[in-house]
Length: 490
Figure 1: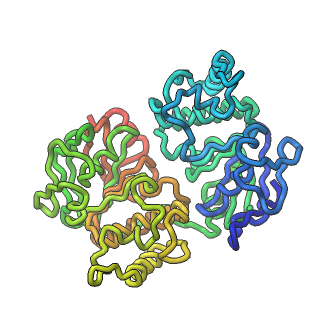
Figure 2: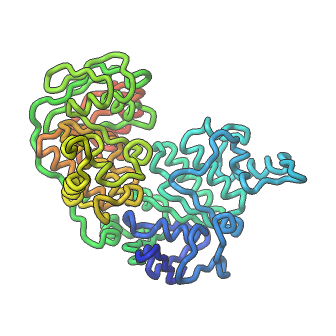
Figure 3: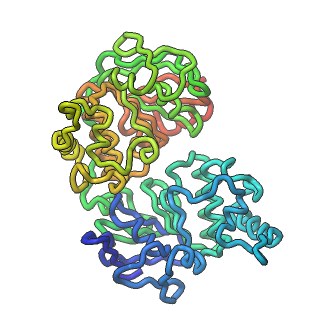
């Protein structure tokens, strides 16, 4: 790709970007949210036509009319939100749009070997062509998408944030698939905010910043600090900034909290001025614990106390009134109303300050939101911009702004930095420290161990729905936490 430029109205999403991908390599594409990675890959996969610049594929000019033609020519894009039909079988999904047929009748005898061959290339012994996609886990679904690309004989496969929803075991399985693709001569463009993954998996890298190519080279011998500085355009001396804070009185206490399925008898104390981390493998019950605590899911038994007083709740509205707020791990489906403005999203749970005679005073609402925009450093036009137009990091800041506007005392944060870039992560880590310093209590669920070890004061581990004791951060290592997640506290 040479000098690729793409504009959307007056905004230049790409400004003369260069990218080289070699045959049979895994190429890391790095950059903050909004740097132009997705736009560049949409140009390569045929979803966008470049305004300027050229693309060559296997020595020939490459200008597909759309994604279908790009796939036919050998380039496949696999998005973070997978594009599968859950009620169809694996075979039907793999062959979708590329069915073998005669006189309108599907030739299953011809299609089955194609699907089986693609699954075999991936080492996907646990996936059968006749299985419904709805029955598969996230990692298996991802391999079905890759099998679709292989069935179309793709020579370049683009993976966009492929591990953001995968367990550690599923991530290792994906890495093995990517290595198989590389060994077979397929090129992989790998987009991820997890720099440790890139160092483990990728051969070369390219960094985009503000729609321009700013750096490229061999991954081997390139430090994480250098990559972060190139992405951010500045030195990030502290990846996990620690704002001094002191632990105060117990604010939130759980005793034997049991959900409909998970968690099972969870107990802990959360103090003011404290960040308590929750770790556990996928399916251990981290999200279920937060949802049960927030009265979003049914609770079978157990007690919740706030400042020493028993605090039952019939639903989230009551929990918010009690000073407890949840930031969902799925901001697009649960955490935000993407078509509404930043101001609406940030203030929806507490509109009272802006109501005058039964009418919503839009000016006051937007001025209040502008203060949160400034405090959290959101990159946006103004408070009226639809949240769906923002980058992932800025969307997460809007979700956090709602809890701050509601002025809750206890913040339940489920995967607070999933799918956002390095600079946005640093800003959110700093905000978490500032909230603890202001006397707030934070319960942070994360599958990213460096994050928990970097920002939390204590860490507790869930194993099959059972919550172990909270350990001081200084007594924890990645290995000790992972062992407890695998085996349980006992």
